[in-house]
Image (tube, rainbow, N blue to C red; front, side):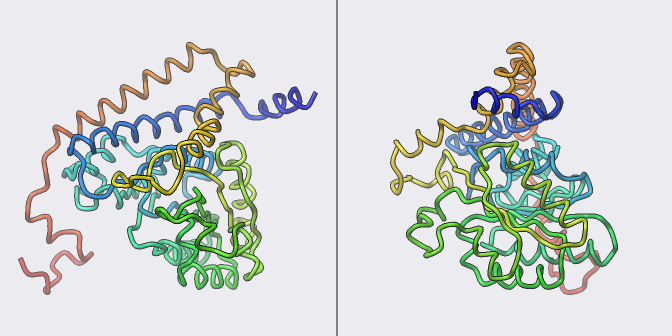
Length: 338
């Protein structure tokens, strides 16, 4: 009886919604798998942090928010823009350091930006995006919009002073911001258990009387519902919410991570709750779509990723003169020496 009830609950969203989730997460998965492969071939260099396993964190939020809402995150930043609709070729070109990338090849993996979809970027300094999100939310409130800013951070970022300063101001000023800690269990190679007396990270918001809750972020529906509740609160003028997305990355912290701090058994156990496979199971179990319909999406996504790689490989590297551009808004700023 309980199993049947659970299945019935899984059909409360439209077919369009479930297929968006599946396609969005599958695109992120295939894109990141290809990025990892290309990194091994040294076509992508520098730092590269993959989002494999955490796709529900982005897709579930995008489905819950409005197109004018703002997103900002840390350096694990390929997933959100892909979920928002950024051209995959532009993201891949940025990883290649090409001029056609989202930041003209100047930012690389850790600094994807796309103003067109209100993605305010990935930020390389741990915790830097947290007070920036408060500023974005302040702007929305000051201008009288109904806009919300959602800010992602890793579990290690909650140790930063900027985290506590930003939460204090956000709650004091009732800013329309949703703070999300993507707790994948490890800050680089250090587990939460080894680095914090507080293991349930969402409880950190209690110090500021900020509403908070844990979220099973391997379940895209749970993410969608939690973000929807937080957004409704923000739009009513009641201020911020802190969400702890309990998730897991199937790959290392970055491509250079040997992953000696966790066991293969632990990874395998989490993979049993793969968010892509979970939503696929829900779709098929409840006959929301057929195997053939999902295969059609699979082929579409694989084609998009192949096209993205082709676009990146055929794009030119930026000219050396680009090093002096996009530094100041004032184009003739007198103190830039060429």
